[in-house]
Length: 468
Image 1 (tube, rainbow, N blue to C red):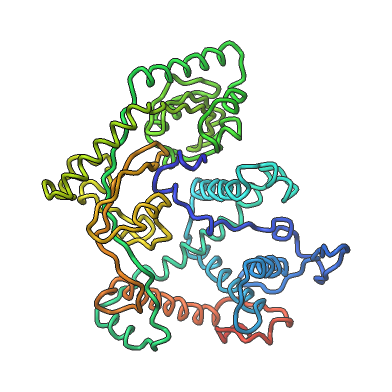
Image 2 (cartoon, one colour):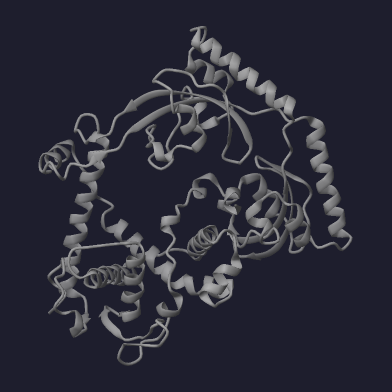
């Protein structure tokens, strides 16, 4: 996937963040009374305005499209789902309108980067097929990106406005205690089983001959391109980046910050149409060509080749890890010291091999968040035992060998104020932030212009001040 070439911070974008917006509904102009017409079970919504918040309208298509998504995801709620969706849109427009009043901004680069991230998510859902996406939306990829820009910018503005409103929220230990004591037994959340895992990672050595052969092959590709061969064709045929090779090696417009530094340093020094020398990164060796530069964004086509690990190197690496594991089991060296001395993983090495969960920034993992190879390795492992060496992939998709040990295993349980203080603290802070937002909404309902269609005046809203 092309996302593997993005900076590690941005690589882990979750697909759940990708909103597949029904563009044809979202961008239609309000005109007349909304009706559902059509045939062959394919209704078409003729749009109308349901509400105006400040200077921002809410269309029937906004509600209907989110309602269809909610149904498709199996979402249920007490009361009328459409009323709930409508109220969330009202709050969103309040925040958007206030962001304009307070001059809260997001940059063009931030929006374009998020559009690209969501496009990459769509591609991942579609198995890398642009044709499938184009066929679904009946628009070109360029048109889809253009249509996404405004709603994504509005989503980012409302999120930033909400962060601004709650920026000063703090929670004291006494407030955490009071929050926990106020929870009923049923409201105390169930904490799933959590594991702490230590690892030692060794990278098999790649021979200098193999490195030289890969570089030589890329230099040959480079000369073929200079002689008139299509780089796009060569990328499709030979590049070992499956995401971009399906797109003729093209990465799409991206800001510098999401590219790995070695790649970006060369790419940003190219002129349009220029072909780079052979460039080494943690992913392998590349040649690249600048397609387009737009402000701080660039679009590059590249070909990636990865040096291959020999069978002899694989065997030697496994034997090295076997020896380390034997020494640890014999108490000749501790796991922590062995990790500091031998592990190639920079993130865990300094912590004695203790892995960090990127989702939570803690050392605890739910089993479902662990890589499949680790789950297999720990299946019959007890706390403190050392696994046999096994093959895995690192973050750059390169082959590595690992041994692991379970530092701790916490069974699933109801949250406890002593054992799970940080978790409960976060819950209490989120509630406090929500209370701040609630108070802000009630205040803005009194002063901001609101006009709501009669169809929604009988909704049982959470906030009572919408109807004046």
